[in-house]
Length: 437
Image 1 (cartoon, one colour):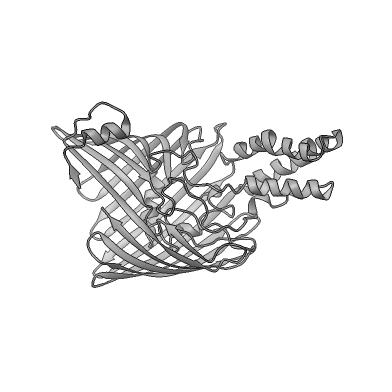
Image 2 (cartoon, rainbow, N blue to C red):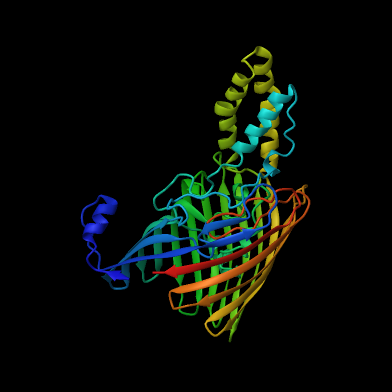
């Protein structure tokens, strides 16, 4: 929907002088549905979920033609959770994940040890894990200049490796069938396999007439998906022509001290021929120095430990136990449990029938840490277009968890979370509606 008279609206939203734009677009997606799951534990089986196939959003795009092949552009895109009207989300499942507190066997009096373990589990599984900063434009906030030899973009943007990942995902990064449902570490979204977006990023992009395109990104201090990387750099190379949308991508983040952090390499994409569309991808992810470890360590030192000492009466014995062995147990195991080393594979397809399409995929997460928390996901779905803008869809997904894996089916806007027990299968049936405007 192209709007020419937006001065009042833009001024009200951004508290800025009137912006003169030759072309401004207001757009968005409203997506919600019902999920019926069987993940065990105490989690409710039936829930209303926002953003199952696509994250619901409201966005503004601007373009001004400067002449001679130059254009000024911007994008501001805000997350909207239709079930609450808010801009933040947490796991769909309410179950507790155990991976990040594995090995935290606190000695001493039973009440104190139990309190320490409970506090550690609560700290490492926050209720909100999507848009934790509650940013107004969490999805995208970018301004750029398009030139005859490529585009330069600045702001919060999708990362190059994630763009390749999305192109290879048969369920288009949404629903319970998304490849991303099993590519997180055993700690769920806190041990993510790829930085989806990066704060404070500068990017150069080019698209050639023959279908070859490339992107190079650099993130300054406090970049990366969570905005905690010391530095972030990434690149991709893609080919989009003759039915192909394939490429290779690489993301490299560093922790607050400049150590190698989350590193992701991916090759994959899709090929369309007639009514069939095939998807395939291989991804390798490693993270030995998560940027979240210092955050949780600080929470232990400033909040959890003082609370445990106070609950224990503040005696020298309790203080020594908490500040000594308890602190060592928490920090040592946390650093080990946050490590990510996995290779993931996915194969999928679409088959178009009239106004609808059948979808199916198989995804495998091969955990290469000592825990060997592998998982295999099977998914089928059907998407029917009621119009060019509105569709209804249904997806059935099954995740076979091995050893201590607890993957539960999720959605585009929120991670699935965890099954009730380690090694328990995750199952979900979703039925939703999506409207694009």
